[in-house]
Image (cartoon, rainbow, N blue to C red; front, side, top):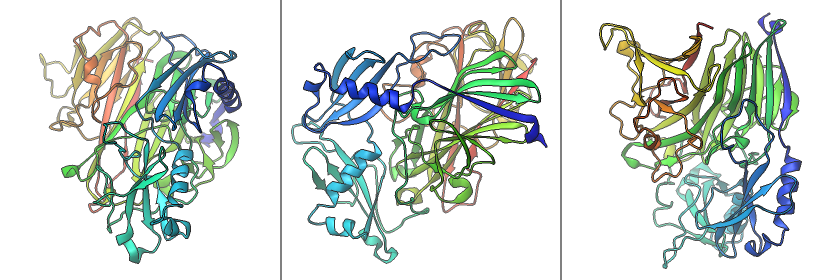
Length: 524
């Protein structure tokens, strides 16, 4: 069988949870840090700063950033540290409110249980708390300041009492509950109409900064065909995470991708029924998978893993990323959570060099998802085919659109739309060897044509360090056009951004919820 021909070996890489927790614990006790953390501060995230420039091989992280929230002074505190060094590098304060953790959400539920109006119903299970969208509920004070207030959805356990459905705000600075005239904060809604299955009780999730990186070695018979570094979503790069991330991907000993990930994910509702939202891609959920735990957050599965798309439930047996063999492909898959949304982040790598990035969409019970809405997912594909520079970008059209030729070269940064009528696809190659990859659009990927919110289908941009997402942003739309300033991409280091657009309509016909292009090698 094909599975007998394809073999996967995994090697852990980077600091584990104990190393990260130990460093943060020591950091939090340091005299330079303790004045900034009063009362009962909570650790919200740990991130590993990006290297200043590209390297041929990954380096063990030397530095990290711990983000705390100081409820006594209502502020976020960023502490930059170095592994193996007790003294922090820098401490900075911020009025911005980081995304909440599951631990913080549970703290908000604990406050709710003591509320004089809602507490009894929450305690006895008549109202079941769930994480809604958006995760923060304003909390603006008369002086213009914003106190940290988490949104908590309250779903009636008895379907006959759906009028009790509500989303409240829990102020963790004052330990107080805020209720809203419309039954939900701005950008959300909670009413009798609820769609999708309820979330699983006691569902485990991860926060931002849970350790997990592995080298994945793929053999076809005696030959090694793939070697790449896989990063679990909770350890992935970018301000909002980026799903299952691949780095330093080599096919048959030659570099293909420096990094491939999904840094941007958003959703827009028809008539702004809810949202719009910018979602995050680091919070992992449970999947059905069995096999060998090979590293923190990674399972070498003995059979295909199952996500919410397969089971209809976000419960499972494993929290993290599963790796398994499916025919002649190696698959990496993880389920993600963002409020009531459930996403599936997946990579499929074939022994012939083909790569199929995939992303899928689902949700758990809420009122918002009953309304037609549009998800937009954007992959960032940093091709370093054999070398970082020396890229050539070409576009194919049939019938031709320029000079009667099917292929034409892109010399400067550009945004392009998919065009099935011209069988449009793209190619990025090494100008010396001619080896490269074609980007073939998926049939379910939609188009941004005429959609001001989606902004585009594919961008080719010149590589610059730090441009791994679009931070800082003003709204929820993708904002990478600020990087498109007419620079040359001929013979340079080029990054491709690929967008796919999915319409979720629970009252419409059954459709495929999976999107993604095919990356196909040529002249390899």
